[in-house]
Every structure is written in C-alpha cells, then in structure tokens.
Image (tube, rainbow, N blue to C red; front, side, top):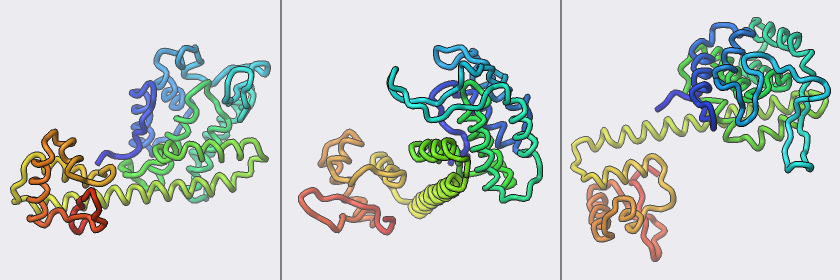
Length: 286
C-alpha cells in the first residue's frame, strides 16, 4: 500500500510530489518564506500557469486595480467567489501566519491544521498554487500531530474527493465574517472520512493477504488468480460467467468451468439472489 499524502495533480506533477515529500518527511522543520517560495517554484518551473506568466517563487504583486479574484462562469457572466487581500499587505500577513504556525500554541493539532489551511488559502499569497500549498501545509501539520512522516491517510486526497463541498464551505467562510466554526466542523468531518476510508482499505488488504496465505498451496490457473484479485480490489457490479469471459478473454464455457472449480474449492458461492443471470461471491468474505 502506498504511503498517503502524494496527491495526484493535473500539471507539474513532479513539483507537487517534491513539495509533498518535503512537507511530510521534513515535518519537524519550520516553514519559512524561503521554503514556501521553493515549493512554489517547484510547482511552476517554467514560470507559467498554463498559458499565463505568473510571479514564481515570490509573493504576488498585483495592484488594487488588478485584484486577485476566484471566479467561475463564462466570460461576461463571471461569478466572484472570493477576492484576496491587497498584495501590499501580504508580507505582514504571511509573517504573522508563519510565526503562528511555527509557534507551540496551546491548541489541538488537528484544529491547528484546519486553521492553518483556511488562514493560508484566505491570504492567497501566490498568483497560483495556493490550494495545493495549503493542502501541503495541512498534511505537514497532521504529520506533526502523528509525530510520523509515514501516514496511511491524507487530507489532501480527501479534500480532492470532497472538493465540491470543500469549495462551498470555503466560499461561505471567506464571504462571511470569517467565523470559522462551520469550516472547523467540515474539516473534522472530512478528517474522519479520511480515517474511515483508510481503515476500509487496510481491512481489504489484510483480508486479501489472509486469503492468499490460506490458499498458498491451492492450485489455481492464471485466470482464476486474476479474477480473485479483482474481487478483492473492488469489483464493479456482480461477477457472472459473461463478465469472467470478458475479463479473461475466454469463452463463457471456460469461465463457467473456472467458476465451478472455485465453488468446489469453497472459494466462490452463488449469490443468494439467484435469478436469470446467476452471479458469484467470495465465500465468507462479503
């Protein structure tokens, strides 16, 4: 099982990976302006975000007449979700943020991760990449909470999975009076979802390992091994002889014989629903 925290990214993947590795492996080291600039430069090695030139490895320098806004919708019908603070205030705001994050404040570590995330993304100190860096800071603080760089859950990945709800609560918090109670509640719920998802993954891995240990001396052909692994890894829909034939690129008769052998070995059973299209399940596993 891969160590969590290395979130997928649509662009500049290597830079994101380097940033996430640095934030979680070197979680004890304090963050600094230089470290944040290094992360940002790693994500945008060409100095561009898509087709647009951006300020890289430095705070954004937009003027009051050219505000940084988070918008959606077609040209001419844009909806402004959030307008970031003026660039003139970033040095002071980021100095306060970095000092707070590096300090030993008397607060629960998970709540500190939540506060750090909303604080950083609200300052919006860079032209682009603020969301990804705020997620790296979040995972960094959670690594500090666990006192370990080896974590099997990731808030970065969970936030990406729940991004619609994430953007909704983010906008509600930033457009309001900055009361972050709702944000903290959402963050903790999402954190619990991440832990539960990881528990399910680990349970599946242990279940699969236990099965293959139990059947280490059982003679199975390549097709049977392939389909059994798919059943453990998360099979889409119900297993039938026709699906077996498609997966293994064999005839349905061959698939039927493979299945009957596994039934004889007490590995598969017929689904209790029955019906016109008989399906099969792993015995005592689901």
